[in-house]
Length: 103
Image (cartoon, rainbow, N blue to C red):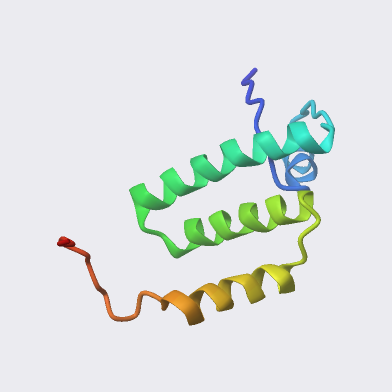
């Protein structure tokens, strides 16, 4: 028996059961689950950094959306915040790397 103690997507238990295995899950209170999502975010970022896979990047974004949901922040509000920051500070399309700043 493998043990995990990590956040999983909603349909993972169903997928496990369909494969003929059994699993034990627990529903956590919001604050505790957000901590698990933060751990999951690190896991998914690490997987993306190792693989460079767009699929792994999609997992990162899904965890971000999960955290937003836990905090009661609508995806539209988050997107508006992202666009406002992009408008103010720019994006990354110019591929700039800051080397130094002098007084």
